[in-house]
Image 1 (tube, rainbow, N blue to C red):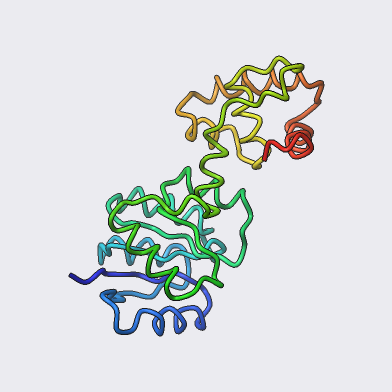
Image 2: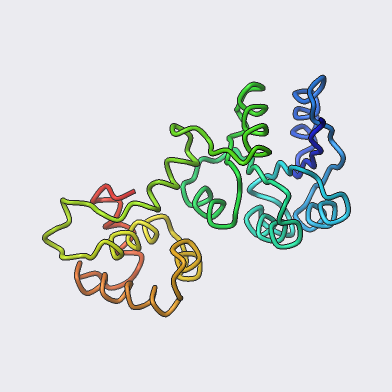
Length: 210
């Protein structure tokens, strides 16, 4: 059975490259989008099994496009495809329901494997940047922070702040209210003697929390 695919990227060469990679496979490319809004409209009309989505897109960012895709076409799987391995991009993709996150230097076998896993709703490999960031976001404990008397949840929020996530994104990731996130942030600021969330993010990096 073929897999229907929409490619969403603003670079023509990427489209040609993916077409070449998917030739003689069970993937059928049913649409090409060159900006975020076009990707959402194509997906709504074509209902593809999978969208390969660039992180940096014109009109709507890839992250905003991902959110729109999962709202309008919740059954469509989305693999983020980017030049950048920025953990913040990865974390935002995870929160909004991406199935995987690949760099554009990925080989044919890696792309085909990721597509197959996404369709079968299987997790990416443990070694992938997607799973490394996902596990990092889930981790609550860190023994070397005992002196700061941070709760397990506060440690988890610190990791999210270190990834550059907003209160709304943290709330979505941890399934808690924005008000609860704000309370945790205030407690963290007080306990580590930081004046703002930027200082918390820097502290998180220094303490090897991300």
